[in-house]
Amino acid sequence: MRVTPVFKSDRCCVFSFWLAAALGAIWDRISNPKIGSDGVQPKPDDFRLVVGLGAHF
Image (cartoon, rainbow, N blue to C red; front, side, top):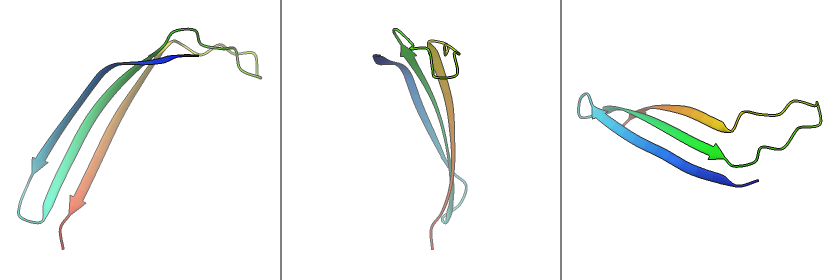
């Protein structure tokens, strides 16, 4: 099974001196997904949304 990263994007926004937020999107592609032990074959595309919130003390 081979995973190919197709798309990755990151954005960061600073609200004030001590507060920041980050948003990311990742799209991976699996060339030949294997059937799992439960008999279900996964889709070849994997989409992920990453959200982060940070505070500076």
